[in-house]
Image (tube, rainbow, N blue to C red; front, side):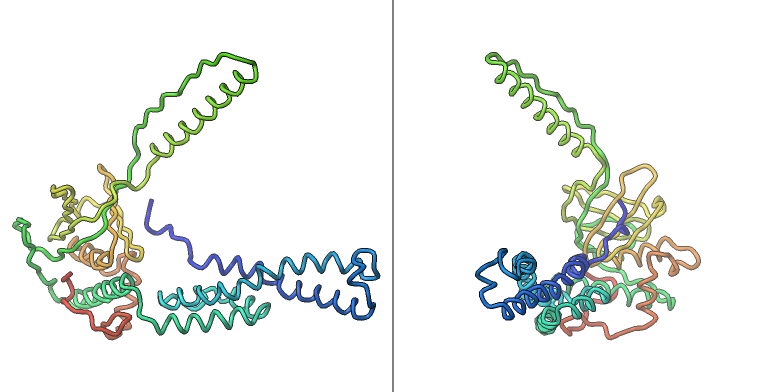
Amino acid sequence: MTAGNVRRPGRYWVFTAIVIPLNPLAWFLVQRFQACAAANPGAEELGYDGPCASAYGLFGLAGLALLPLTATIVVAFFIGITEGRRRSPFASGRRVCAVIVGVCSPPTLLVYALGYGLGRALPAPQALVAHQVGWETAVNAYAALSRGLPPQQVLAGGFVSPEPVYLDTVMGYARYYGMNVTFQPGFTVAFGSPAFVAGAAIGNLVGNSVGRSRAAAMARAQWREHRTTRVIVTATTTWCCVDGRWLRFDHAAVMEYYLEGATCVMTFPDTEPLMLIGPPAAVHAVLFAYLRGGPGWQYQPFLHQLAAAAAHPVPSSGPDGRAAAGGPFHR
C-alpha cells in the first residue's frame, strides 16, 4: 500500500548477467567442434557417426544458443538509448552485472555504452523534465524554510477559503480501499450423452471458478478512483477537487506520510489513504512537514533525500539546462 515498496530498477541486467556467461561457453563448443572437424576431414558430414560425434551434439546446442545471445547486442543498443535519455544511472546502477556482461560479451557492453551516450545527448522526456523541475523546486523550498523564510502565498482562482494558499497545482489522485463484491455462481442443466453432460458440468465449474477469482480480485483492497485533480494546500489542509466537489484532508489527522519519487501517500485513522502523483509531490511533502509544524519539522524521515540535496545545492535547472521558474511554491 505504501509508496516505499518499490523494486529496484534494472532487473533485466540481472537476467542478462545470469544468461550472458553462456556466450563464451557456446563459442568454446563451436570452436571445439571446428577444431575436431579440421583435424578429421569428413567428420562434419558424418555427424554423430564420425570421430567428432561427442562434440557434434554440443555444437548444435551451441549454435542455437548463439542466436538469442547475438540478438542481445542489438537489444543492448536500444536499451542504452532508452536509459540514457531517461538519465538513468549507467547500467541502471547494476555495476556487478555490467562487469559480468563486459567480461563475457564485450561487444554487448560496448554497444550499450554507445547507445547510452547517444541517449544522453538527446533531449530528456518532458515527464522527466517536469519531475526534475519539481524536485529542484522542493529542494529550494526546503532550504528557504529551513533558513526561517516564510512560505510564499499563491492566488487560487475559484477557490474560497479564509486560509492562505501555498500550493495550487494539478496531480494524480487515488484512494486505497476494498469493496464488497457479490458473486452469484451459475448453474447448468444439460441433457444428452454422458460425455456431453460431463463436459457441461466441467465447463460450469471452470466458469464459476473464473468468476469467483474475478470477484475476489475486484473486492481486495487496492488503489481506486484514479483521476487527475486540482490540489490546493492551505495552512492546515490539503484540498482535492473531485467531480466538482472539494474534499478536505486535514494535516492534523494524518497518521503516516510517505514520499517516493513523484508519489506521496497520506494515511488517516477514519478514512481511506490518499495518494497524490506528479512532479509537485516533493513540494507537497515539504509544505506538509512545515505547515503541520513542530520542532525539527525538517528532520522528518520522508524529507531525508531533500535534506541531503539541500545540503549540497546545485544550480536550479532541469535536465535540458533551462532554469526552473516560478518561485518555490508556484505551479
